[in-house]
Amino acid sequence: MKIYKMPDELRKRLSSPQLFNKNLIVLKGPREYVATILKSIFYDKLQDVYVVGDYTCETFLLYVGIPRMCIIDGNIMRKPHKPEHMLNYFEHITRCYNPRGSISIDCINAIKGSMEKPRSLIIVDGEEDLLALFLQTNLLKGYVAYGLPNEGVAIADVTYSNVGAINIFSEFQLYET
Image 1 (cartoon, helix red, strand yellow):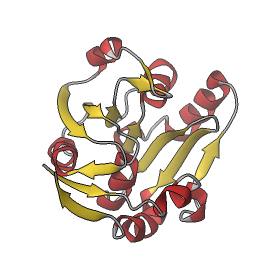
Image 2: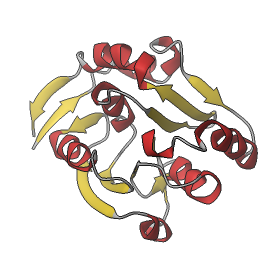
Image 3: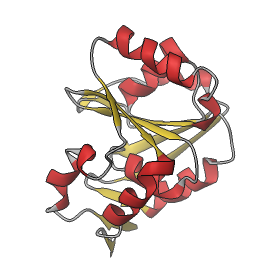
């Protein structure tokens, strides 16, 4: 399997996404408060929203609406989370494998194959966190929403974030596992 592996020196930079994306919006506070803000921002734009992370996807489904795509891994803060209740919201469901600290070609293909299919759910065996970065490099328009552990929900408008994301992704190295 081919993967793009994140160099160790990038880990710290990516833990503070505001460093490479000055236009990043971070929403903090109780879930219902954050959900109310998300709903006010995206009430008529859900077809342009791509969500990464179980908790953030579940927040959208419960309070905001069904985004164009959700990418989940069945974990919240590295603790198992059963996503079965989310399956009914989506028309297209696919699976891929993505090791921690990397972006696999398997998941890249799953994302690209789901791009034109509204209401897509991608279930990742492994870890989905870095797939938010890949989405920001691959979309021409839209928004990527993802959770920042113990901090809140980040919203990236790819119109402003894709150049920074591409620069970060260019530092990843392709490996065959």
